[in-house]
Image (cartoon, rainbow, N blue to C red):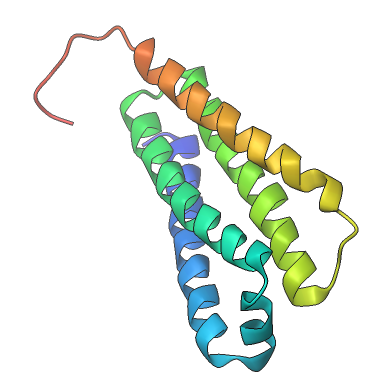
Length: 133
């Protein structure tokens, strides 16, 4: 399996695990329970969960299409989007750090570009269709 495919799958799995940990903390840890009342925390959590699955998909596609630069770009942008969007919202709601607020829209933009790159990467695959994946 190509190195970048492993990185994407590992990051996707860790991101999904972190989303579960934060969801559990939101139910049991008082400081996190207060943050959950903020829509930005809920948005960060939902978007992280969704894009963790996208990152897993990018990793699996990167293993199948190791030569595709578009798939590699998609996985990289999914990671960047998670850090800039969800990471910043977590910093704001859990730690009160609002310094990087301007980066949140860039995270959303990175995610949009990631999904487009993923679509292009699959579209450009010109190998004959097979029944195995």
